[in-house]
Structure formats: structure tokens, C-alpha cells
Image (tube, rainbow, N blue to C red; front, side, top):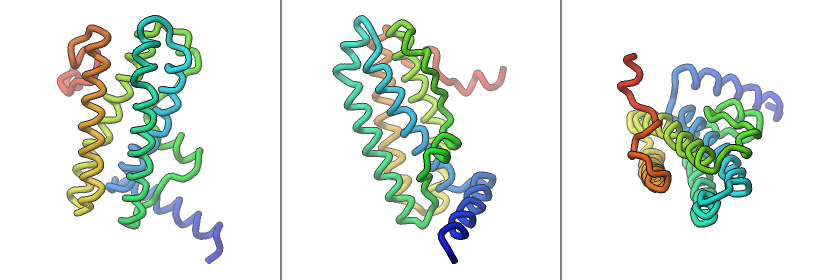
Length: 180
């Protein structure tokens, strides 16, 4: 089979796995979110003003580096389990569930930071689903990494919310909101 045929086969498999969904497909969403979130962190690091600029000087690069590390580790875990790995910009954009907007760099620094925290929270929705699917599939390495990622993200949300003077879950996803 030539390269183009192999890739077309991969795309068909990806489409099928995203409709089932599988652990690998859900982890593809997680890695795509990590990829885009790194860009969003960079935007806030460069353009936030006021106290948030100092916060981002202290934590922004750490966040980017940690997300890049999880991105790479999860991709390797996918390969180890013979799962599909999003490897094109097109796939990463398609699978990311975060929204980017260049105009946000002109928002108040606290609004920019809260947008990042909201993205962390959105990522948790996909990570928790991926953990369950990985555990069902007996993909323990993937599950272990995802649990570490979820724990790290929760710590970053708490850190940012405290800095902003918010309650821990203020303005973030709440399952009870789904009932309304």
C-alpha cells in the first residue's frame, strides 16, 4: 500500500473511532487541546498587562512547557497502544475543542487569564472521558498519564482562581448547570 492509501485508511479509521469513541480518539482531542492551549498561553504571556503580566511571567512558560511535555508523552503512549495520533495542523485544529480569538489579546489581563483557566476546565472534560475509556481498554499507561495531567490542571486552575480572587469553581463548568 502506498503512503496516500495508508493515510486515507488512517483517516477512515479516525472517523470511525471518533464516532464510537475510543480512548485513542478521545486522547486525540486532549492532545489537540494541549497544542492549541500552548498558543493561547503564549498570547497572554506576550500581551497581558497589569498584575496578570507578572503572574504570566512567573507561570506562563512553565504552563507551556508542562503542556508540551504531556503532549509528547501522550502521543508516545498512543503510538505504544497502536492508536492514531493527530499529526497535522488540520487534524489538531479539527480535534481541538478550544476557541481562539486574536482580539482577546486586547482584553483586560484578568479576562485573558480567566480565559486560560476556562480552557483548562474544558480540557478536564475530555481528560476525564479519556481516562475512563483508557481504563476500559486496559491502556494503563495512557490512563496514568491522563490522571497526572488532570491533577496538574486542577492545581493550575486553583492557582489562577486564587490569583484572580475567585472561588475555586467560579465561572467554570458545573454538571448541575447541565440540568438547566
